[in-house]
Image (cartoon, rainbow, N blue to C red; front, side, top):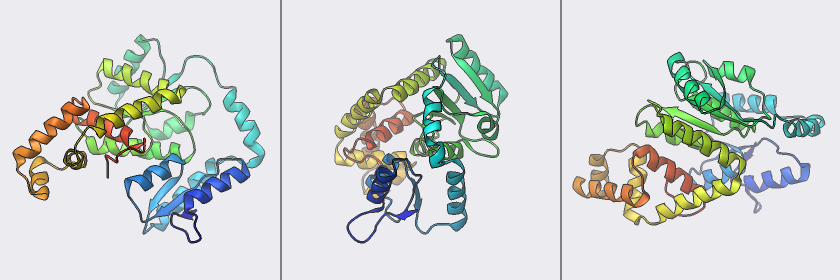
Length: 298
């Protein structure tokens, strides 16, 4: 548990890197910070650290610590765990579906099984966690809004526990805010309800492919960054406000420009980035934020 800003020339992330290097293990780390800039949050996420904004709520911090301690392997088990992960089933990956709507689960299962996929489905996050065993190639499809543990909380739990399970969040129609939160929590992608067959299969294949091949993930992020780099400073500013859920009328008032000008900029943003919808724009902007290029999201 470390503060981000520390005296003496090293910050919390540098201490984390040194500690993990010295111990030769991925020690779970929580970083406390009052700096919520995109660059800082991105750096924290890149080092697989959990981040809490100051002032910290003791109860939430305590719960996070308990989860991380419960799932962190002891040093005596590190070698065995490494062998177990390497000995996973080399066959086709399994696709996990977590949704409390049986009709949605059945529909997604039907599409995936018709495509030759192995599928397991669960009605709740709790049921999924009870059955889940890491080590096998897999992809998670989880609904954002579930009774009990939400889909977003499940993604955060998996991330805190160090499980690198590629995940796709299923969101409501045009729920851009949830999509953004999901990708910040570790989702590799998101799709909207009603789930289309083509988008579903493409999303699953993309998530599995990028999980297997880091170069393809880097190429996707680099392409996204290039699209965002083609926007003017004003267009990037408007894009941030749009993805924050602000309507054009409010954006115009905040920036002191006409609503028509905002709409023209929005149209130009969609055209320059090749985005056909707000969720597609959010996906691209978040991917670009990982590259260290111009920061598209505040």
